[in-house]
Image 1 (cartoon, helix red, strand yellow):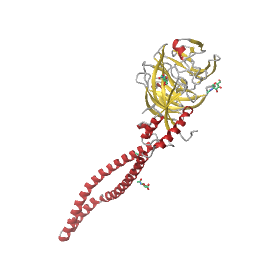
Image 2: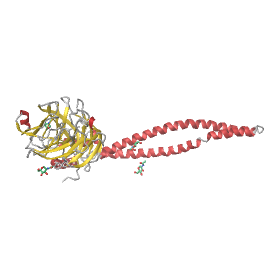
Image 3: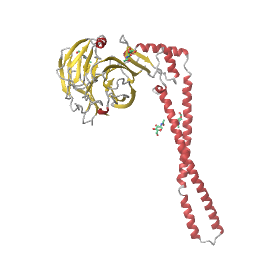
Image 4: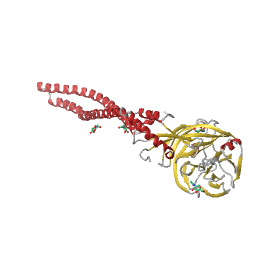
Length: 453
Ligand SMILES: *[C@@H]1O[C@H](CO)[C@@H](O)[C@H](O)[C@H]1NC(C)=O
Ligand SMILES: *[C@@H]1O[C@H](CO)[C@@H](O)[C@H](O)[C@H]1NC(C)=O
Ligand SMILES: *[C@@H]1O[C@H](CO)[C@@H](O)[C@H](O)[C@H]1NC(C)=O
Ligand SMILES: *[C@@H]1O[C@H](CO)[C@@H](O)[C@H](O)[C@H]1NC(C)=O
């Protein structure tokens, strides 16, 4: 449940949600784009039913449920086996009875040849042998049942404890919590640095211009007053970068400068970072670091073993083999190599020297990736550039682990040739079939309360 209500209301909803609010647990906070004054908009969100499971109480409850489920499954198995064994034992019983009467018969008819009867008896006894492990199993099962019973007793004890706790909040305590929460929220801005992508909203069509394929961007390290826009139309055979002083200048088409780059670019995956343009030189795996201030190339360096020139492009092609991007953490390049079987490789770059600082190999095929963008050190990959595309895969460089995601976004004009995150704006810049679009992203945070200052 997403709430943009008063604090009191939010808190009440939090409390309502199965005693999730405990001082040692984190608050769940979403932050979205900045508003016009450059302030981060953050929303404390009442834990949704599914989000409740994020905190320890919810986890405990889920574990309990799973335990109960496991137990009833085990009991079911036990039941089936007991029934089968029961039938077996019934048969054994009649055989035992038959055996007994045989013994009596032998006793009464002393004349009967002993050897034949003895053989018969021996055979019957042998057929009773399997009864022994069955009886052993019965003993084990009895123990298991006793254990189950105890566990169920323990479980209901824990559940009752939770129920009692739910009623334990009184109004004064609630007010205390509201006050301390308000204090904590004042620090919201400084704490909301990073989070996990939860939702993509928009798009907002900023402008319709250029060919079907291109790139436009702002510098995430520039101050909020400096909102220059750079515009690089087409994916090949071009080296003219247009600059606009602001988004509104961009919308109205008032150019402030053009830069004639020394080399043509490949693809649409360039990035402007800290006053420099980083791009892939046409028909090569060379990365170029170009300074807007001096109008010169600062560094160029080959990205060793990276596929280029449509060897490992994104799904739409367009020489989009090598994707430069920036996030809260720094500068990154996303590409694919033969060594990693054409799967996506992530490298963090030194922005000055373009040297690789660290590399991660994922198992996601670059040719099956629609686009990718980095937020807080996690690479998000879409599964297509066409209608119905969604953010499908996320690779965390922090933990070197991946997960599949299902985060849709509206591909309004049916063909996405660029999608890049800007950490300052908390927005995705997209080039959508000749339309320059913006998406807002919602990130999920857990604010740890113990490191409150
Ligand atoms: C339930 O059973 C599964 C599979 O046997 C096991 O992995 C899981 O840990 C069990 N859960 C609990 C709470 O005992
Ligand atoms: C039940 O709880 C008691 C006391 O907390 C503990 O000693 C025992 O091991 C528990 N039994 C089971 C089956 O979990
Ligand atoms: C951005 O550039 C300035 C000056 O060129 C430099 O001092 C600063 O360290 C750079 N910031 C980053 C994050 O690279
Ligand atoms: C992003 O959110 C901000 C603040 O709510 C809003 O002003 C802006 O229009 C949104 N942008 C998009 C692309 O939805």
